[in-house]
Length: 335
Image 1: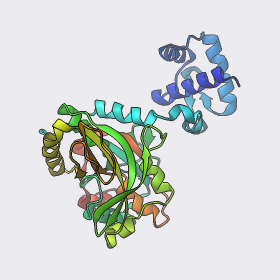
Image 2: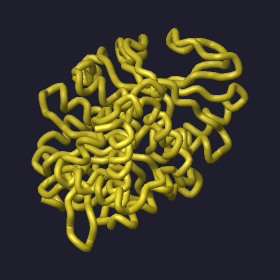
Image 3: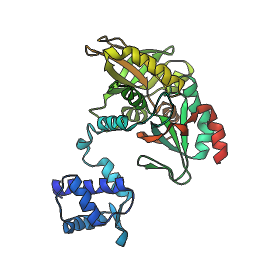
Image 4: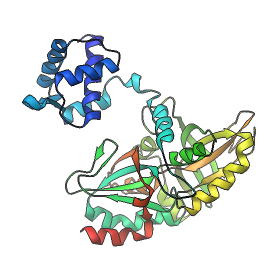
């Protein structure tokens, strides 16, 4: 397959994934034009037949085509170089689209999602809540999604539940709504000693990764939430942010309000032009460390419970969130 054909087929898969419904060849052609691809309908049909044969799409007759599970997998793995920088762009996009009003405490916030069975959540909720209790979570709120509900492009399968945790990028959105631009530089592992931040043990820049850094640290077994929540010595996921120096006082005030709203706040805030935990910060900016949103779920991986999670999954209304102590009661209402 030529590089041009591969690129066009991947664009078609992206169009079908975004549509989340069957599309005919003429509608696909219109969407391709929006991507700067000048292709006639006959060529589009040819591409679609090839993709049907590969199992990437399914022909539903007059209704059109849909993307298959194989197509989704291909989209997630193909042309990985093209995805470098995608995560950083997604952060900016969700930050811009977020509508949460801190004063009214209403609007949309950014969440991660993790898929578990009802029995898993019921059994493991004490472990999940322990991370919240020790203050290693992003705020004290979460959400629960039932089968068929969709967050971003993640649909909750039958016999499963989606556990939503606050994404740390929510802070970016709140600060932007108050005129404060935030630069997300990297995700890292923060080493704790006697419950106090000691140093950043590992970092991965958002610009240089196609995956959320915390997802990588979790899947590779580099975290230590069991230690962090028992002895106070361990490794937890965090993010590093930079903001304009003149905004520091405003940021401190806003993060106090964010904490009251249950959405979390910065774990540590530095001073203009000064290193924070040995991480250099440019003149005219100050650094801040924010707790990772997937932390409450990450502890499960340490006891060999494999959970499918998606950071930056999408946005939900603030009103759908509830305090983590209500989780057991919410589960009883579903099971």
